[in-house]
Length: 108
Length: 371
Image (cartoon, rainbow over the protein chains, first blue to last red):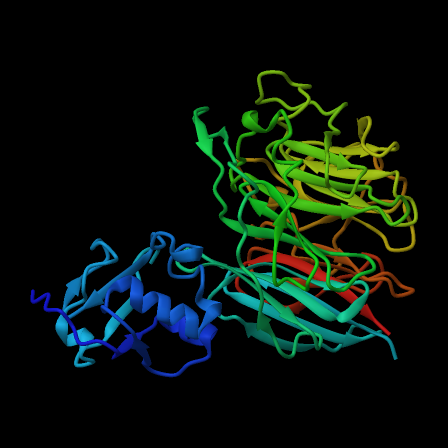
């Protein structure tokens, strides 16, 4: 997959799982302005800054590890195990594709 | 006219059930927070409009919700529960050391006189307190760091601090209970703790009368007589007349002394309620008959209460936090089942009727008596 250096100051589209949309009181996708390199950490930092109620529900407080049953998808790839500071795929960084935060299929 | 508000936590959301003082017609509100496990909802004695709810999920972790209008509107507050310092280890199920890890809040106990102060009992067992309405939480590490802590082991449901009782008469005195560590008492508002398990005997642990290691399921106290405590242990119903210093068994003629909840009549400190469950391997009522047992003698002598409760083919459980009493003149008693029924009695247990029959499995029931 292309790991091009994304543009700076991009608007990133983020799709939250249904329970977190309710918690954050948002409908549909979230659009986030991310300053600097568009990485998973930068997106999650921006998301939690906009919606503090989501702190601790996706990853540990203060940027801790991803919760076990949360997955990160984009461009039909599972990015869950990628290091948090590498650039996201260019289509995500340009806003062409959303960054998906997913509750893992577990527990039926 | 006075009324009641019953706060129900279930596997898939919270429900608020309200009625007038007759407790015959009910308004059902919910599910609040649908799809989430609601371990506990409780109102502040100092401000009945202020409620706290523990909302939790295996996917998304812990959320604490607060209502300032009696459960009509809710707002998420703080959800960061960090153990104080390096938390160390307790024993895992296989006896190996296991790091203390926060899983969820089992029980919320609002202060008796300050609506901004609330205590939280969590899994892995620890005690937290907020003094700003739930925005920020600080651990009181004296309990978890008791010298016996490294030897504590989880019960089947996890190593949970499930009971917090505040003594209304003695400043600073409070009780906590942990499965499967036992009962503990603090006389300095939670700073330091001592085990209060003398008199308990538990098969299944190497030393049957050990200082800690007992699977205490629930404690109950009548506020007018706070020195007397009742306990539903894994097996055995117990009583202490001296603030937990010494316990004696009061199972008496119960058909089985295994169970989870225990509670005390609002106006009669010697009237106690339990729900006998067949055994630790059969978590359902004996003979498929759902019976609350009441003692009017502070234990030992128990009578079955069956009117209005299913007396055949009933195989539900009643969990430890799923029984409560109101303080109306005719004391109301309430309990919820894993089958989703919430039963109410407006006559101290003589007769029962379901308020609702088909909720998700009920985890907790609390009741507020409204002016």
